[in-house]
Image 1 (cartoon, helix red, strand yellow):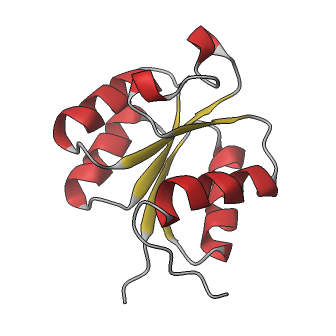
Image 2: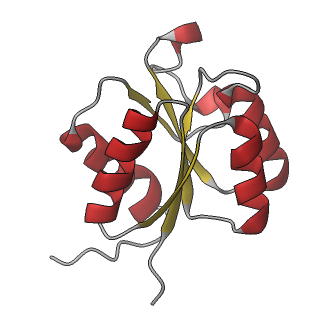
Length: 129
């Protein structure tokens, strides 16, 4: 069976690396994008299992990218990644079209919980006991 793929979109290379390392340790294939236009281009090339999407990025922000994702990929799981609590995003991600919100700084337990909630349960768990 093909490993699930996750796209990590964040303008901070350290955040991209942290998420990539952690997600790969869970058995996911990870692709990264540093900005919104790159993320859209990668989504058009290959649709992943899910997306970790930063809200605050220069140029096209995360909410613009999320709008584009929702217009085309209605069931794709999206996790908002944010350092701020802009508009209460961390408390209520559903109205934005996201399944969850991960606040920076995050720890490995938070990442694992979000992965299980948004990517494994929604698509059938493949973890070993």
